[in-house]
Image (cartoon, rainbow, N blue to C red; front, side, top):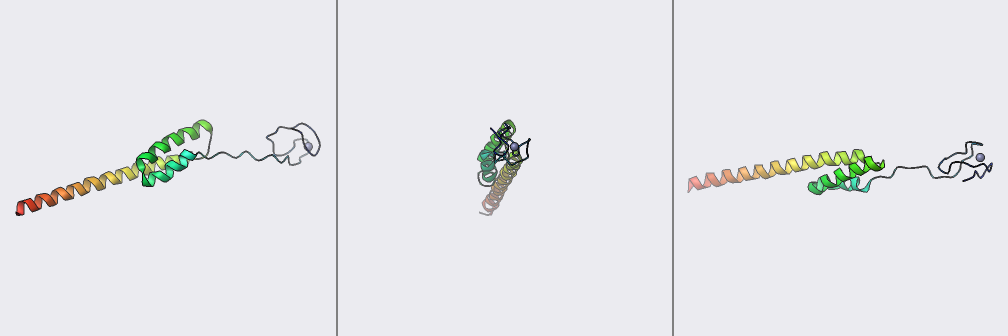
Length: 109
Ligand SMILES: [Zn+2]
């Protein structure tokens, strides 16, 4: 492309003309945010099994495609692990509680 100000050929991705310094009007290159990383992060709170899968894929894509969201995906992986761990503790805890109650009442009657 050519500079609108001085007419010299310039790199289409450059924001300013290297010859005269005029703004070229080119949109600055913003990094895309990886959608899977965002979805994985959000789902890690509600559906951690899906969240951890999306976060792992999202993080891989972020690194491969140089996209934003790698940190978010990592947070999604960690939160998914914590959510799964808490769910397991709650499940095992309630099972032990139920088994204890059951044993208690069966000895009474
Ligand atoms: Zn110029």
